[in-house]
Image (cartoon, rainbow, N blue to C red):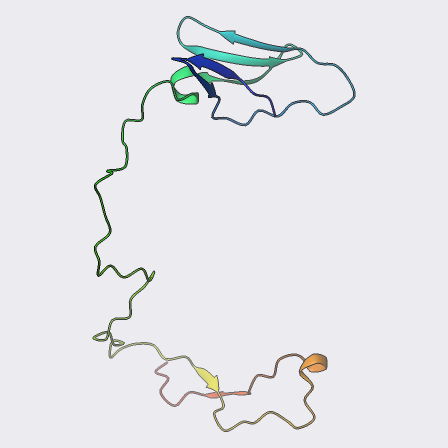
Length: 131
């Protein structure tokens, strides 16, 4: 990885982009060009490998938005990704599948999960299917 570092107000600022160096047995020369319009270019062996805007690729300025240090999660906050809705039910016209696993089917005695794979019951016509 190529490190492009600016010293600003007593701090070392590392570029926000990932620049890969050449990985071989040869010696390479690295060039950083900083232009008056606040743009830059990084070259390896005279070839451009990265370029952009100084303000967007280094954190010279304080962020425009910061986290509110006073913000706290409420005591009764629920961290679950989804919460079941007890009032939720399927609509009357909900499509039922055409076939369902046979509820009366049983796994054969000679079935070997390791050899035959996971057993699945045979499919039967769904009496509730409206198709």
